[in-house]
Length: 174
Image (cartoon, rainbow, N blue to C red; front, side):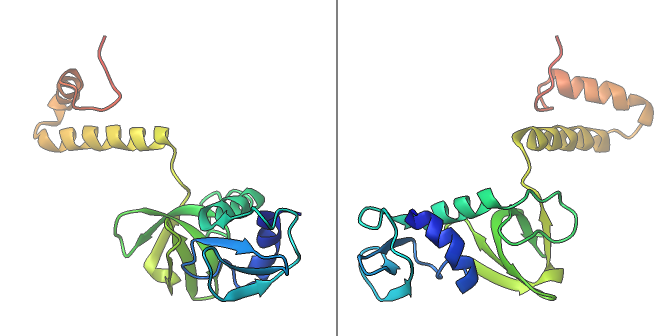
């Protein structure tokens, strides 16, 4: 079994990826430690590729996500799901859910930094596709155009003019 497979199988049972360590390796005795030296963190089954394997935090979470079901956006995301998170109404950031309880949630951002907080302070949504982002940008631009129009009968004209001027992304007049 490869080191990545052993880690994906064992680390969730042991609290997940160890803190801010960027890369894990294994020695011939089965001890797992931070690449470049340091104290041993775990002793696990010896991997077939122990001599050459270097598992990054990013590779670990990618392998973990491959095992998890896709979240549809209902309720709180399950552990292991990559999603977008907003804290107290701030901008959205990609994260991976590490653990959750009745009141607390622990997540990891890109770069493998871990954060936790009360579930009520966060909003989560599935990661949006590029098409979703383009749609939202076009809707925002149309909405902004409509807000500038004082006479509702002129709304269609204002939207047409905004499209013609290239102010509505992804929409062109031929």
